[in-house]
Image 1 (tube, helix red, strand yellow):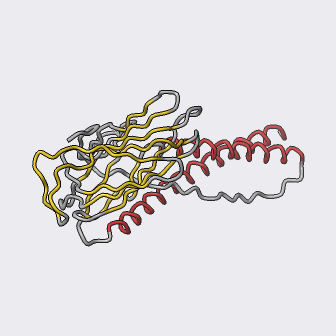
Image 2: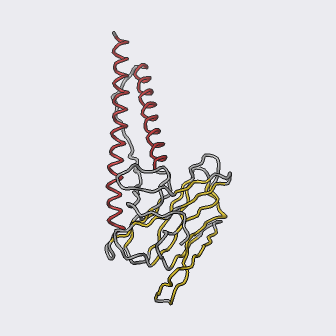
Image 3: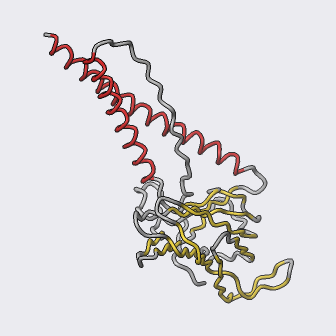
Length: 258
């Protein structure tokens, strides 16, 4: 079967970073010197928060599938979230290959706005029997083009797949190629291996869970927990930075008084 890659690995981590709102209560300092210190502390804290936000945005800027896990053996609508990582160019084409070596009888696409979707089909070496008859070919790649993802934006592309393999625990890889209007190409085809560092351009992955269970809900709960732990970590970093800045300001104030 035609494809852009072949891999079966662990499910792609999917989390949304929640940024808590920080409220800092400070004692009244009537002096101009105190006001200057407070302004410096506020500026320093703002820089820390901005830096953390920029890091989080960069770390999450890759093509992902949501939900990251669906029941095996059934139909599912999966959403490919495609971010634009370029600061100057727009994304004008997205090519999504179906998992190589896996037969998915029905692939339906949804294109919105200016986007148009086309499919490439591949003949099967062995026909597959379905409730609707015998299949001799299947969709091997979906291409979206005609629209544009501007810098600093992302787009979501929906694809309905089914019936999916009935092997729970299997992970399907969807190699994706993203083309920009300046000719640059991002290839989201790097192999994801459990226990090894995450590659720079990981292939979007879809895990197959036990049929009949509410995997979307359980996955969401796990993701929320993961998200909360990341958020708490960021809070600690920011508060630590604020504490360091405030301590330095107090030391300067003490020395000036001396």
